[in-house]
Length: 404
Ligand code: TRP
Ligand code: SF4
Image 1 (spheres, helix red, strand yellow):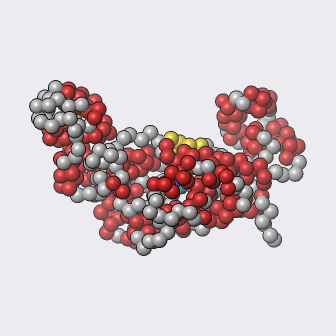
Image 2 (spheres, rainbow, N blue to C red):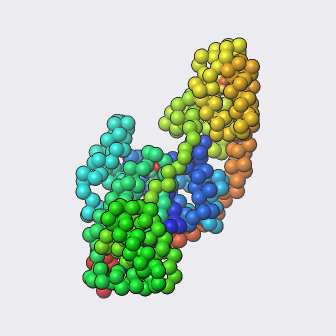
């Protein structure tokens, strides 16, 4: 059995919605750009996920995927360090999804909060489909196939990572057995050598008897940091900490993205469906024009009326873009009617336009050469597939599907 690298890998995905807007950028993408230099990152275009709610009209999918990828690159995702790919180009996701579907109780899927919520929200679509119900399981397969330590997502996706953990646990419980596991694990403990033998035993006991998760973390670090033991023993020792199984599909953790509030032009959350967005590659004049007419505190009708930034979406943008000094200037000026809204928006417009201009510039190169984008994708898909294949070999073997 090959290694299940833990502690370093990150995976996340995004549905292809076409060109991204500032809400997408501050809600996820910017965070990915930071993460790529701290972890081994896999980021993918979740095109199959788009089908779970939009199966009728699929004509725009390739274009939407390509445009989103260009935004990723323009925003600073670096294909030299992060693995960027498209879900449907790695068919192993589908195989794992199928195999996991065999062990997934229907009730688990029906209980996922987004199942009923989305069906109600998207009333114009018939979402009483098999694919839509199974969508969180597809997401579980997307995640588990890369055996990541962390999955960076926003609040709305936490339940999906939670079900992923449950499915991993169930899989490991069902198929993570090997004959004489306990015996082999005990033998592996001795391989740790010296004081680590007692330390491992004590930490394991503290976790198993008292649920001490800090002890579990320390024990994991102890195992992972040990260069003397074999990969197989490492897996046994990690599995033995929590129970009697080898962890074929390690449980990933949520890396909750701190998402600032990014209001759209009308003050509601920025979203394509509200038509209130500012595009990541939008032309500067258009951006400035949009911001100039953006909603402000509705109580501030005349220039002489004092306002309340707490009730103004422009203030929320200042919180994302402006430094401390500017923020104070806004607070004071607004509350005392010392500044007008046009004046208040000026430094904000400068910042947003500058940010977008950088992204626009970087995007140009990719817009002009589709081969460049295609090449990046091909390379990313190759890398992703190599990792996915490794996992699938272990999965098939564990499930007894390795025919020779
Ligand atoms: N479901 C996610 C969304 O709608 C996208 C997604 C698909 C994803 N697979 C994933 C996110 C795996 C993280 C990990 O935004
Ligand atoms: Fe909003 Fe600024 Fe106008 Fe105050 S001055 S209402 S914060 S735009």
